[in-house]
Image (cartoon, rainbow, N blue to C red):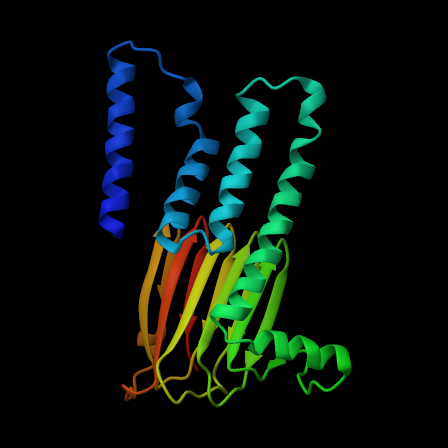
Length: 242
């Protein structure tokens, strides 16, 4: 389903619910609360990406937690189980999603890297990322990464209630790279080489995508193309260069 169709269906549902309310037909008050907004945004992002990105699941879990606690009138003795259950679901999803990406999207590179780390064969420094693909997840924390791969191919960056800085100024590519970024209640700063052609395909909801590259004039190499996709919800992305 295309983006416009998803948004159109969502607007149609909201309009129908508002019409029912104005007609005096039974209307649950929790349908237009802020937890439901988070759930709706999470479903919208999830449908677009096949629920493969962490941000959609986190939004649904956060919205579902506060909706159940504040509006659904659960017995007090059940409320204490909501948060542990939500964390367990998120943990299972992260484990399953990471395994799937390692096998299908990044062609086993991260599995090989993890084996090298366990056996002490990895030459990866703490602050530098040598792999062709980056997979960075910052959840309730912050991280800084410098990518120096000369055959960079992309990957995924997920930031939820945190901040991530990724420096690509020392990286290079041999073919167009695709980088999926998902930011929820957080911030992401991307520092890219001045001659890269960065194309933005990021959906932003109550968020900002600040492209500051226009301050640095210079020739652009059309063969060095970095395509950004994903979503930013209640957060921001800053793209800059030196």
